[in-house]
Image 1: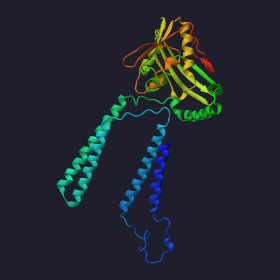
Image 2 (image 1 turned 60 degrees about the vertical axis):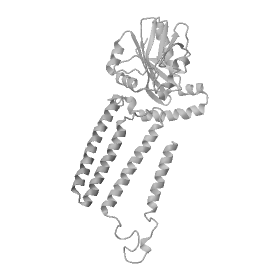
Image 3 (image 1 turned 90 degrees about the vertical axis):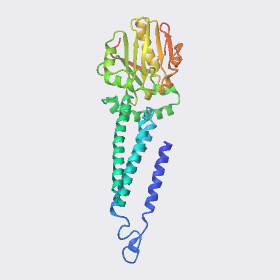
Image 4 (image 1 turned 135 degrees about the horizontal axis):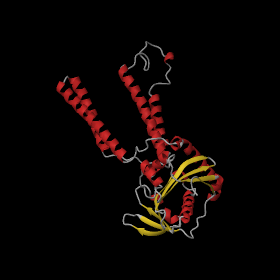
Length: 359
């Protein structure tokens, strides 16, 4: 936020300086003499074309300033995902400069009447412009391959995202007033809903699986077709989790997939959660539900895996905090954790539980 304020302040200084050069305090109606003898009166000192170009540049500059400010503000939000910078963009920057230099070369040559220079400049600028467009297409393809454009539909949660942020601001104020975490959680009056994967939630489930990076234990990616297959697989236990509190509906906030159902060991294939519900003990509630179903299926243990990436370091000790024991640590940082089902008790946080389609 400090960076944003500094940028806006600098922009305001530039605007004030420009206005100060326009003789806004002058009173030409009090001045005497022929029109044109006094600065700021009579004909404009610059050609109309240059004045128009200046106004256009000012409007475009203000537009880009607003976009840049919005970008800085977006970076402050908890779910900000840094954008991959394809290397080709740096090459494109150089090509764009070359194109501009070529056009300037052609302009200078036209003033000298140099036809060969005009042709060379226009050719350089045109070829560089085409190369720039090709580079932009390549950069777009790299971003697509990295998964930045995988959401082909907007879910209800996407449409309500602004409301989620506003409600979170209210929750922060309530937490400051409550002081004690347990008192704060009770005040939220939370209701959590557990439900297996279904066709209605399939698009949102796939979106969360493919977009969640920070609170994601394995970052395995599944398409909607894969999610449908998991739904129909009798050896898989699936959960979509929603949360409602005093301030509103948080939407779908967690997804869990366990494999090995029917055997003695349940393997947590996928466990992810939205960062907007951090600090509300949702993970303890999810584990409580997992233990309930694993116990009913006579499973002996739950096995969890953490696969490290450059973005999910915040959950490296997730299983340890929930009482799992470390079983193995790989050279690449991957860890395996085990929790005995019989005898393990998790005290549920203050939430009402609703189950849909679950025993």
